[in-house]
Image (cartoon, rainbow over all chains, first blue to last red; front, side, top):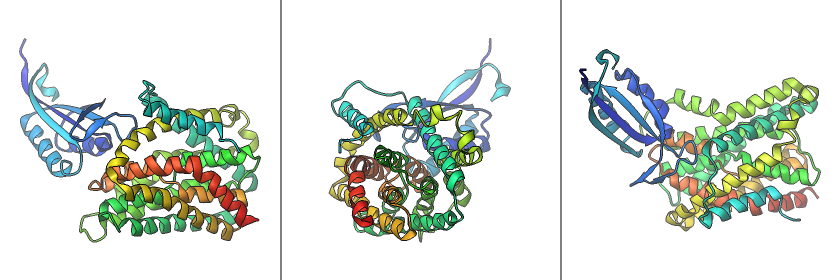
Length: 100
Length: 310
């Protein structure tokens, strides 16, 4: 079986950003995304997720390198200065290349 | 008078969290309870409006919107002494806006004494949430050259969860009227206080979590969170008196003015004024003002009200 090379872009950020972020993802060419509630700790303190706006979300996007770069650039410019956000990219193999 | 038992639930939550108990309510429960409370308050107000509403209410609503705007500007002026523009504007928006739960506890305080306030107070609760958010964003954006996203702000303000549920409940209650609501009242009327007590348990846990952050914010924030509600309550009480509301209405309007938002405002400000420090406003609003109003403020405002109306 052959897997096609794609990028898996993961963003962990504040839950209030879900709506604007999801809109931008689609505009920048992501064909799909997965959002899940997230808890954790780091330089912004412990994010307990006790309330809807204080929680964190984790957004996963499988896409091409170009799209991943565009999304990363947008996040850096629009959100990084004022929001808690981390972003990382990993190499993944997918079954159906046309899906992403 | 002894403390309202619903307030004891708040103290239980506070104690449990401070003593590092394992107690934690699931976030979904908190969401569900808040939907219930907003709908129940809206329905009750709507039914009462259908019974006794008068056109004079419209004028009063305009005055209350003006009041919310004025309080936000006042809070901003005070906060600018020590805070930067963004933090002052975001915190002012919290204080110009209102807390639904504080209102519910004040209403329960009145109910325990068998006193009923005018139905339009629920309408005031709904409309007082929004002007502060708009004014807060305007204050933050004034002169910094950044573009204001009006569409996004309007969406946040008018279609926020509390706005939709409170106004939706009001309209449903108003359309259904006293007879139509009978089949719904076992849930929305009879269970109101038990649900409020559960919600306050959760609020106790959340407040305790904010107390730790308070130490980082310093004395000015604590002083602001204690003194501003007192001053704002007097303004609210005076306005109620001038508008010709009853003593019970006076207490509720004073409580609305004294209360500060910790749900709608933080979410709206985080999106619209991202450079403001959310921990600061929330520490003042949830860590200081909310418990102060619940434990001392409401009985105190009632004493003031009785003195003014005597």
